[in-house]
Image (cartoon, rainbow, N blue to C red; front, side):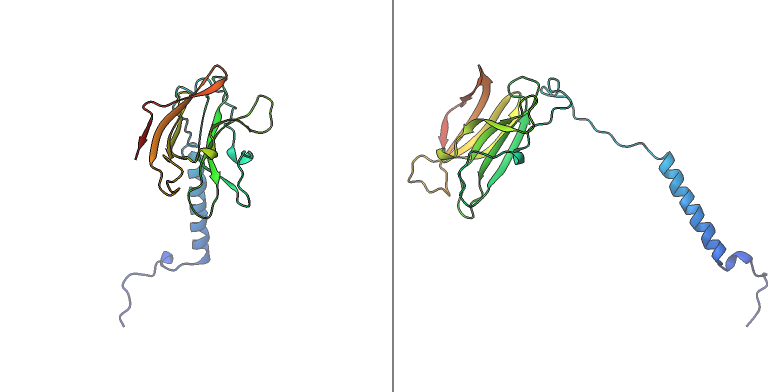
Amino acid sequence: MQPSAVPELAHTHTRPIHWVATATAVAGVVALSSVLGPGAATAAPTPGPQAKSAPAHAAPPDPAAVEFPLECGPVKAVVEKKASGDLDGDGRPETVAAVHCDAPMGTPPDGVYVLTRAAGSTGPRVVATLVDPGDRTNVDDFAVRDGEVTATLLGYSSAAVPSCCPDVRESVKWRWEDGAFVRSAPSGAARV
């Protein structure tokens, strides 16, 4: 074996002091990057037609905190869809919820309910029923826009039609007018 012509360098052998120095340098870089890093990200919704009238502190009513007027027997009521917006122009958002019983089989009918939280109230309450589950309809499309509730309802032309296969499709909308929700249908029901 031939000896090296270059003398041994001190830094080619690691010693505990080298590891301590490396760990200290890495900790310093991490600490410095957290101080000099970018600020917290902030995002704000684009103001829409309803964002201007609602106070910043008004949260829409939570459907999970409401007992719906549904007879479900041993199963629970399930909120299938929900949407929020200021429907009556008072500056506080309402929540509209499509709810049905959590049936293990079949297609249970939906009920559509409007929830509100009165000023000074601790919890939400149901103030209107837009679709009664007794009508044997299901909600397909569902939205709250510009003070209106819009939905596509799937129903049945007769009691003889099996509940698996709705044969009537109807687009409807509700608007708050003179202290009540008024339902309108652009073109009536269509058979599917």
